[in-house]
Amino acid sequence: MVSVVFAGSILFLAATWWVDFQSREESPFIKLGNLSFHTSIETGINESKSLNKPVFLYFRSETCYWCIRFEEEALSDSMIVNLLDKNFVLISIDTFKQQKVASALNVRSTPYIIFFDNGGEKEISRIPGYVPKEEFLDKLYELLRRRETGG
Image 1 (spheres, helix red, strand yellow):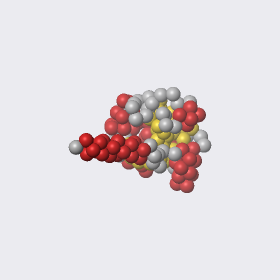
Image 2: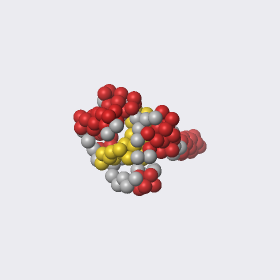
Image 3: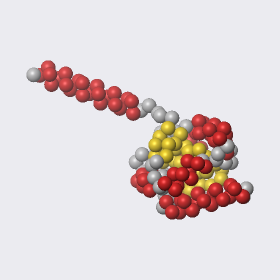
Image 4: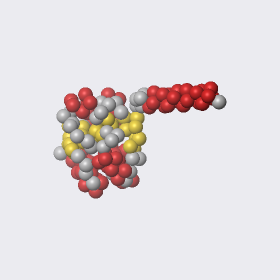
């Protein structure tokens, strides 16, 4: 009986280690709300150049209450999802795992959004902190209008 319990404990510990090990591997994409985001700046910028689309760069952390709320509300709203998916290349940066990226762009809190032009060369706009989905939708429309008019 002792050997069965011991073997079961060893299997449990091995399974726990394996799950933890697998979760550490970085995926090239992350699903937030109803959208899929690149997790690499370089990959997202390259796609932005090839598709001739501006960049939606979203800084977040897994433990950020306001990030989770923004993802559940705004990034799950069908109108916002359609606008972002159609008009932008989406990149998500985890501020804990990718501290150098956040620091290089002077991002000190989450959630934090930066819009860049096609190819990610010129910053268009910043949204520091949480914004309700209605306000975010207004900002998206404003950015898209400015893009259409060239202003």
